[in-house]
Amino acid sequence: MLDIAKKIVREGPICDHCMGRQFAKLSTGLTNDKRGSAIKLALAMEGDRINKDEGDKEILEDLSPSSVNARKSLRLKGEGEKCWVCLGLFEKLDTWAERAETALKDYEHSTFLVGTKMSGLLSENEEIIWTESGTTYAEQFKSEMNREVGKLIAERTGKEVELENPDILVTLDLAEETVHLQVRSIYILGRYRKMVRTIPQTRWPCRTCRGRGCETCNFTGKQYPESVDELIKDPVVEALKSKDTKFHGAGREDIDARMLGSGRPFVVEAVEPMLRTCDLAKVEKEINERAGGKIEVEGLTFTPKATVETLKTVKADKVYKLKVTFKEQIPEDKLRSTINELIGVQIQQRTPQRVSHRRADLVRKRTVHDMKLNELTDDYAMLEVHCEGGLYVKELISSDEGRTIPSLTGLLGSQAFVTELDVVGVDI
Image (cartoon, rainbow, N blue to C red; front, side):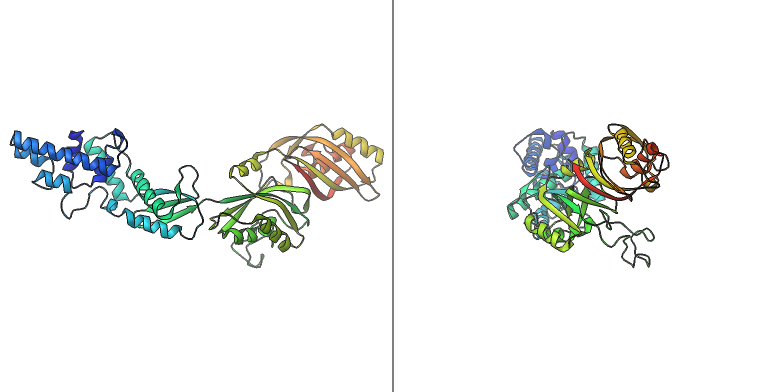
């Protein structure tokens, strides 16, 4: 160990932290600065022994090129000199902790974690000391920096360091001498009903300008003036003082479809929230009042991030109510018998033409669990379809020019059209 330490001090003045860090894996219960101080003391004592027993001044001087007096150089790292490895950063730990405390003061949080963005010179210095000394016991510079500044922040703020899922990640940018915060999002689970046929589920950039703003979209950057996402957004942003929101739904309905029944599960993600708690009953009421009957939300509750992945991957069965018209009059007995032919059958659907510009051209296989005729008039039929999630129900009726097999149109031998569609059940 002393041979490695001798190689280290030959490179220039080094602080206790940086010396001790090169041997961090050799003992427990010591901080790197305590470890480094002990190693320097051992080197100084070794220098004394060589001087007294052998009187070899060249060997003594070889312990540190920065001073003839080896003991003084090793113990004090050279009066007025900065550590060549960390460039004096470990003398400024309190400064970094103060910067972090200032950045954190406006954010509600109970846990944090410190990360460090290294400068090029510091990274180079670390590589040099590892290469020249040959140490295999070292800890990375950033690990010690994270730990030591983290301890000081905890003392100053009373908050806890959390390694796995902190409320806020504090990044120390050593090159820019600034602190950056990465605030963990807040996730709220609920269900929404969409009562109108004119709004999409999520924000939709203008097709002409792709969101930049143009005459087509009246310089809003949006294809549609509002969405379920946006009607939910503002009360959440205000309650948690977040930068924005992201909307995650358990599937989606078409713009011209209503979402009724018990509603569709969704998660709204509050991005970079300054607050981490709020009265969700009040938020729910605010959303519903501002929406003016266009949408309704219910059952808002805080939820973990993992819920988003569950919503995106779950295969939820759906229940639809359809208003269907026909090119020609269809006898009731023929319509009922044809509907029965579709129950329990695996439907093969090539990606519908209406979504082919944004979906892969695949053949999907889905099952119709149940289908029934609720009403039949001279002008239309009201059908109810209970099916596997992912079935394109409009094409189940229309056949999409033969891309869906079997279909109501195909079995009837006469064209059928969906003129209105309501989602009335999402079974999760």
